[in-house]
Image (cartoon, rainbow, N blue to C red; front, side):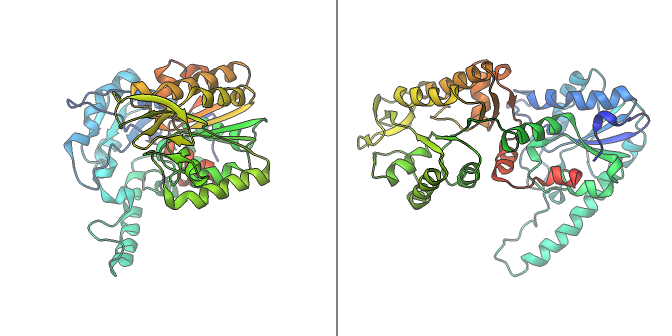
Length: 416
């Protein structure tokens, strides 16, 4: 695999897959430009070498149809500002041959939203999986996807993937396009390299004690992650809504708290596996309960096994936080994905904020910490702690699949 540091882009056109799926307000203004800023080091390296840039990204979920509200034309000025140079815009990503051919060294071309074409995601449109014709439609779409990827590849001399947030998808622009470049002319960008290195640090090179903090609302969304981590960690903290399935499975009374009855046997199996493997599995012991799912609801702190009828657990109680603080501060490696309360409500964000502070303190004491997942990232940003942890991942879904032990197509296409 070619390393971007060792490659000279002088006189070459670089097709770069970036993740510019940035949030916009009603007027099309960017509300958080983190993803654009994250790609700048890679893009500047190419430009400073004397290369030119052809940038491609998706935005939102247009499902293969043109949607002006999801046009990347809205962010061209922001990209130009970040790169301190003009950015040309191609209004059709699959018909940008002339714009790409005319590009001079140092110039930048931004392609329109890739997902305006169904070929980008490679899913048959307008036909359900249970339809007998689905398999044939899927084969035809696979060929169409390859043709679409080839069109994109023909714009440039070299391919760079710097979009970790989509690395877990085998889309035309994230994986298939790499087939049209030889090994010397495809590589990971700086952001992707950092993401892959950060995950390797916790999964392959972790110092012990290694603690994983897994939160969020549902066990079903993270069961595979939890199972894979049991072979790697010394401590597994399970918080947030998913914890109540574990409590109910043990006979606890959880009131109206979020839970998944069908996963109670799995929860007990995880607890037994943790015991067999010598993993300290730490669940919440105390919760801040509310009488309705609202920021302004009445609150009371109760034992996690005895939540009153009509009340639901909404945040980690102080006794839980005290237990978790001891575990986190004694750790050498920390992986955190998911909040331990209803973080979007200010009155129930305390627990998640405290976890962020503990992780930052442990990092200051020498631990390696990797944060991933929207709410966990939002927590460290909200409390101004993003620069006090080792690494904040840009891709929640991609990071979770990597932690599950899955191969990420966007990485494999280059590192094969």
